[in-house]
Image 1 (cartoon, rainbow, N blue to C red):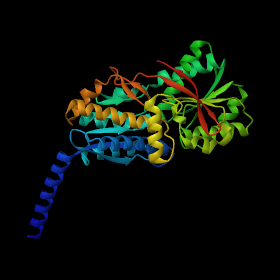
Image 2 (tube, rainbow, N blue to C red):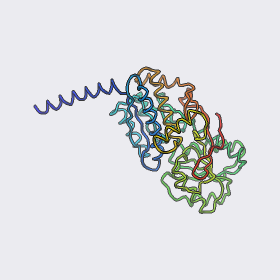
Image 3 (cartoon, rainbow, N blue to C red):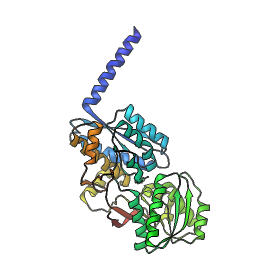
Length: 374
Ligand code: PHE
């Protein structure tokens, strides 16, 4: 008797809950590193996404419903990236997934989104193979062949440097790809790679790689990795008397870069998705609202998360449906969306074609140096 009652209760609550979710809410998922060595990536992009959700809910929601966010912490591991996206799709029944930031994590999660025909939009994974995982996988950022070219041209043409050393993370699709694309352009221009050294995320001692690099006398060191390791590389390089500038890509963008590296990273350069100094009204308004809400200036992941969420909402509104295939088709049509990280159009590979900026670390700030169009 009791068990019949309980199963009845369960059945009604599932029915009620299911209906409620269907009729009143549009549930969107996010997966990202909220803890661990890539924590600022997930925390910032989730903030940007939350801001976009609060804004749309204030202005009446989406398809007459409230937008709700479900999210999981990937801990910065591929396994948790897969688990997170599985849970979002099978337990939370999200209509679309935003994330991950790191390319390796997006590559791990994408096949699951593709299998279930749930659109996935990565705000800032730049490795080209991410969107090649299938026609449900999108990104709102540029890709690494472009980013590598930007930094190679900047080093060769703007700074007149000819001899580069590379220090890359062999476990990261992002780092390996960006290093290769950089080398291709830099050599094509006439530059030389005097050393190509390796590490693995989580390493804290870089002395042996740096001493090999020092022997070769490079004019700069390209470190296409994430902020935690790049910061330690900078510190140890300075301690070893290496004075040449370091350069990197978007993976450097974090308030923690300077916190960990201190003055050692001063003067170094990296490419990025946006700059706080962009005078466009979209950018300046976003910075003001974000700072008031979260008490910090938005980094590139915050801005990309915000853009990704708003592009998703626009697509859902256009599709006038929350079905995966309908949202997918609408996303593929995205044209000239005025985002914080630039004007975004999705091309036939589901990538965004847009400009990159080069920033220089000056004290605790990242100062705008150059903007490069595709
Ligand atoms: N582009 C990096 C990757 O693909 C992730 C990243 C984006 C990191 C933006 C910081 C800022 O792995």
